[in-house]
Image 1 (cartoon, rainbow, N blue to C red):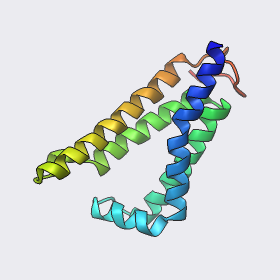
Image 2: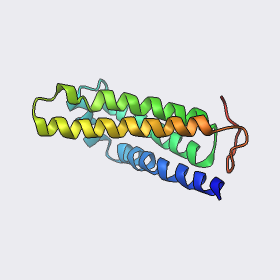
Image 3: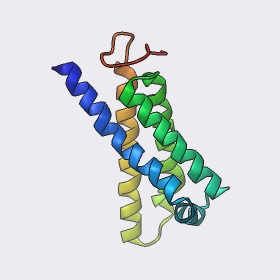
Image 4: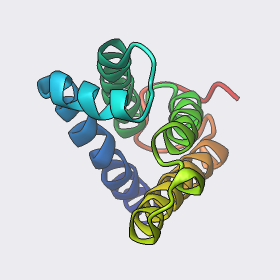
Length: 134
């Protein structure tokens, strides 16, 4: 049953990236405005690119396609998001700072989950399409 729980965990972990990725693509203009306000260069292009990366990473983790590499790339992407989008240390309003810190920590926690997935993925991981890269 442990193998099935791991598969369910991979699916649940990936749902946030599927939802966010499709949201980035469907609402690219609104997301780009938010990203521009956070001083992201080439905001619309970055929103679209990250949307595609999130979807591809989520699908790879769910299906087990180069899952360890996909999880590592998700971890890196989420840490970059945290630093670029949730710079709580720059906020002067205490309430805004608290919200941004919570979002930053959420992203760091998700990156930790991705690293766990990466580290437990082997050539013998059940319910996968390809073997591990690392």
